[in-house]
Amino acid sequence: MNPLVLTIDLGTQSLRAVLVDRNGTILHMARKKFEHPYFSPEPGWAEQDADFYWEQLCEACQELKSISGEHWERVRAVSLTTIRDSVLCVDKEGVPLHPVILWLDRREAALGEPLPRKSSLLYQAARMKKQVELIRKVSSCNWLRHHRPDIWEKTHKFVMLSTYLSYKLCGNMADSTASIVGHVPYDNKAGRWLKPGELNYCLFPVEESRLCDLVLPGEVLGDITEQASRETGVRKGLPLIATGSDKGCETLGLSCTTPEKAAISFGTTATVQYTTPHYVEPQRFFPPYQAAYKGRYNPEIEIYRGYWLISWFKKEFAAKEVQQAKSLGVSAEDLLNHRLQEVPPGCEGLVFQPYFTPGVSMLNARGSVIGFSDVHTRIHIYRAIIEGINFALMEGMHSIERQMKKKTEAIYLAGGGSRSSEICQITADMFGLPVHRTQTHEAAAIGSSLIAFTSLGVFSNLEEGIHSMVHIRDVFYPTLHHHELYQKLYHQIYTKVFKKLQPLYSATKHLEANHGS
Image 1: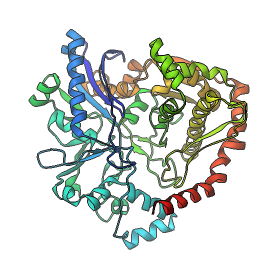
Image 2: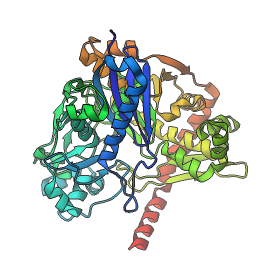
Image 3: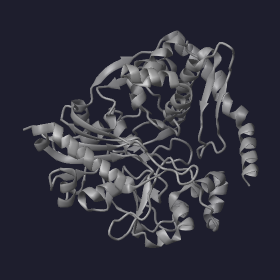
Image 4: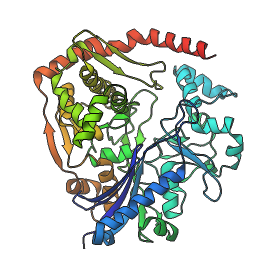
């Protein structure tokens, strides 16, 4: 009997429980869309109850069991992949002490103590002092330590959301080395926790006793417990296999295991990620992540508010399409994407910069749109958003290529945006590279289950698993004259926008700070 893997894929806006076979076919899927993905007790905060996710996981698994019939009995392992940089505190009994602080959260800690003198001098010499101070401020562990000392004192473990859900499934407070992506004291090069005295430990001073155990991708985190079996319907005793974060599993599920392949994710956060055999910083002093492909690394550039911008546009400008979509029984995105063909490449001079949320490498960045004229419509803005995200990803790709000293030969797409053939073709035209789309946009689930199948011995190695489970469905080739136009827009306009507007961004931030005080 051919074995199946049950993979749970938790995203920002929904959770999917899927049954996958050794050929990479998703036989059944139960999806729980979150009506309220998070709540905000204060402006800029993003929290969610930890057990909300557990309840959604249980409901999805129970639903999957009810619709999958005899396939359910063929499940031989469970794997889990989740959103990154989302953390919580639990007590000695594993009970959450505070809601999950999600990756979207923008609160800042009011820090009192200075950095250790030696570390401060080193950061100053590297011209990273401002970036380091921002990292300290936006790190949830520091906010909890300074603003909720009562919670921190009771905290037995400070863990990722993936760690907590693994604990609920198998009873062990452990996680994959490829799932530890966030503001925590982690050595991304060695795949271990930092120790006091090491350079970056002072940024996230969490004692190792408060951190989870680590295992390598493909190893067993534990077996499904009797309690978890009752709540989820998953058979007791099945192994829970360590895999990696959603983006890392997605890259593997796209077959991007070598540096010439770029994995681009059109998700809530848009990313360009590679897999390298050696430790390669995507930007100076920014570490790559431990890959779900054991022994390798994932250098990545992220556009924080990536395809979230599509939701923003829909809410603010696309009431007409939203209403039409309801009456036609399709998505508003389908209608908008079809209309992309009404606007020529380059949006007749409209250029969009997607930095709605500043990052560590662009401290005062803002979103901007330049080049408006009387020919422009709502659909021009929509296409400019898509082109702007791609320009930002292109900039990230070039940065990683310089660090790798290798050129990208092909792009592989995942995420909700990859479902649009129009967006895929725009991407091919902009990057000037063939764009591949695999058999499913649920690439993270494929990557996670692929690791589990290899762990079970179904495949002798991950490359054999990729050959069996990842299939190219479409290839989009660039249109030469469109690419030439995009190259001119990129080099002559887009790459100059941030530098030209940076003084204005800084002035805006200063005015806001003074007004707020």
